[in-house]
Amino acid sequence: MRSIKSAERTLALFELFTKRQRPLSVGRIAAELNIPQPSTSMLLSNLLQLGYISYDRFARTYTPTIRVALLGGWINHRFDQAGGLTARLKDLQRRVDETVFIGIQNGAHAQYIFNLPRDKPNGMQVVNGHVKLLTGSAVGRALLSLKSDQEILKLTHRCNAEAGEARLRVVPSDFLAIVTTVRERGYAQTRGDITPDFGAFAVTVDAPHELVPIAVGVGLPIDRIEQKRDVVIEALAELKGVFAEYIAPEAGESQDSDTAA
Figure: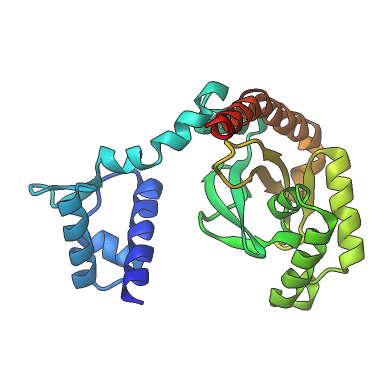
């Protein structure tokens, strides 16, 4: 149990650095992660020894090292041919001028793993690591559209069982019709289904075959949905097309070579 807690704290630490994007003191880290300062000091000491963070003894602050960036370097490399995932998301955000995010499936939930917030009135706020039911989120509905109807029905029952409020439960047959519409349109949409006053559009994006499926979404206030619908849908479709062109063939080639080996 202690090792699990240490792992959670380590990941939370690096997500904090991602959010703040600057050196942080042990006190600031302890306060933001809500863990005791002695435990924070021990965690930082271990990571310092392993070379994942560095310490400025004059400023008394800690910073992640290049070793952290290299951990996921191979994943970013697989997206490079399509112009880089982060770069493409930034282009998407500039085009739609709203919050952009990535989500994956985590059990019966869609989990946000990356977001680019838009600093504007009533902009949608997304927290990395936060989860929503697959059935109630645009990201979740987009990801479910990749599955068979049988799998969708099983996950729908699971979502209903885990829903904390009656309003979050869905009728399986009705929800299956929603996913059918997602497949036909090529995108998923919500409109205040879980988060009042906010809606979202999402599409699945081809990823290297070693990775779990991902969905890219755009979140915005309901009162801006009609105004921006066409722009958002077009931008998401173009993003999906770019990755389908570059990632899918590469994944197929890799699978062929693995089979040959």
